[in-house]
Length: 129
Image (cartoon, rainbow, N blue to C red; front, side, top):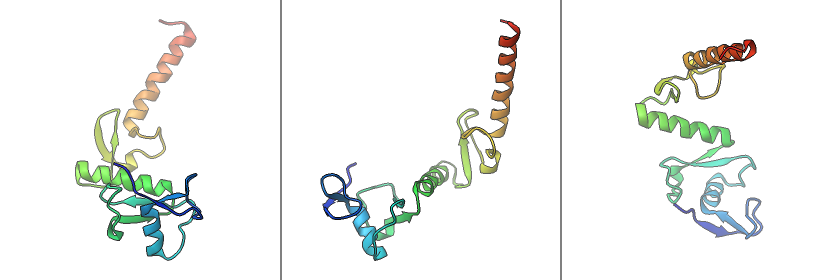
């Protein structure tokens, strides 16, 4: 799916050809000023060609934009935006079960992998096959 471009050669976000994505221009028009440099535009329905004001969210940075996508995927898959997927155990769990460990893995999976790593490291250190 291709995005639409408009020719604005003096715009702060124009590319080398003087073009700016249409949804950026529309969001700025609704806001009444240029967007901050780190801001990002999120399309609620995921369709970058649907540039209705009701479909656009101005995100403060890319991190917030990624969070919206993550919560949308979770909501579509489970009906609950507060869950996160652990690819190691193939299950959806509460977000607080992921805090403070390897990103993307739940605490039990992280602990299991950490134990395996320590066992293997010990075997290599001791010369055990």
